[in-house]
Length: 170
Image (tube, rainbow, N blue to C red; front, side):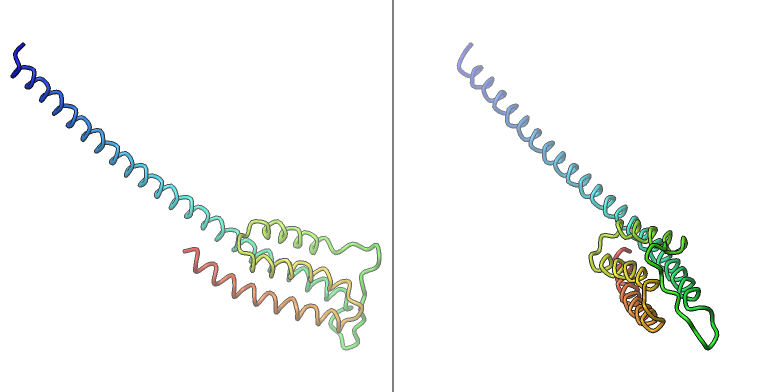
């Protein structure tokens, strides 16, 4: 082999190596871009599913809180002795259980409370649930009415937070 053949062969080898290296780098870049695009799509999908879960949980919690309010109000009316002018108050006895409706409603609210990510909403819901248990334990009809007003204030605060959260989840 003469010198020009060797130089030609080296040139072809070097040219092939450079072309192969450039092709490999380009393929890696495309692979990296594709991976990044897939990762972003996966993150968007995950966020969409998380938001849908929160929307469903918040709507279910809102309905459960309504059921809790209805059960609490029914219990309140029974304990206050009806709707006449002279009201008596039948306080929950030491070993007496809450009404089944009130227990079921509270349990459902606690279950849904655990599915909410927002700490402010969770705090308000916990306050509503805990205070709902205080109504039957009140010593007087006036104390029960004050507790209900306190619960209603927390409920209105929850509704405001609920609206903010629902807007942010769309």
